[in-house]
Image 1 (spheres, rainbow, N blue to C red):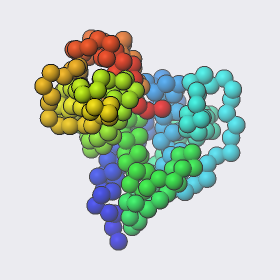
Image 2: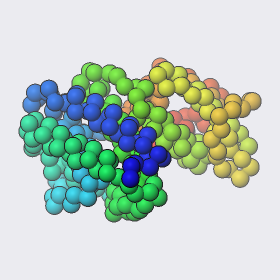
Image 3: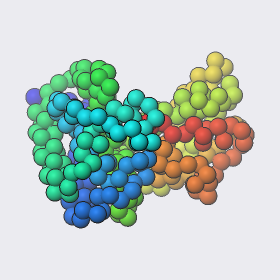
Image 4: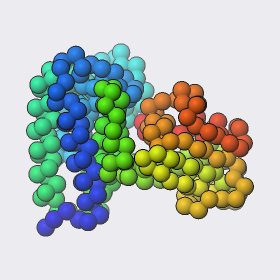
Length: 274
């Protein structure tokens, strides 16, 4: 048996990003592992620890038995507390310990993917102990490692791979969140439309159309007379949607036209990652 065709793009995206992460961090000296990344509260070491931790969970390894300190002020909810456990357990690991564990984890995960014969709908254990489909789990890993690859690139001054296979997964996941962001979180007017025009390494033009019941749907065709239009580059879109920056910090890179209250509300609710 081989990997199901539905899962192959996620495996390819994960592989591309994890290899890029390994290439980025392998030559780092000890002090560079402490560099701050755009991911709130996390250093280079913390980001790599998180990547290792979630991939070992995909392998079925037990989570570390560890008590979190009380002074981690970037932890504000249970989801973040769950994610922090794998990170804090490795906070005192040396550079060689980090790179060797990353390398070993990648070898094990590659072997797992080569032997994966389960169907996309097979239920597996996800974060917080919740059961999710294998397809969702693999999509989440592809999303996660690409976003964290970009965190590391920002911290280390090594931009790149904005159009790699992982970017396509990230685009689709973030677009899937837009109807909720616009219609529910930002309370866009009923029977209206909002357009997003994104340019750069990844380009797309999408409309969120809100029906008479206030439900939002994603469409590929532009709407006439939209309530708002956003024009921005792909990197800024990702940084906003993943909570790596604030609307004020990138105001010069986002052109928002139309209803000012609505555009402000959408930008305020744009971050969809926890």
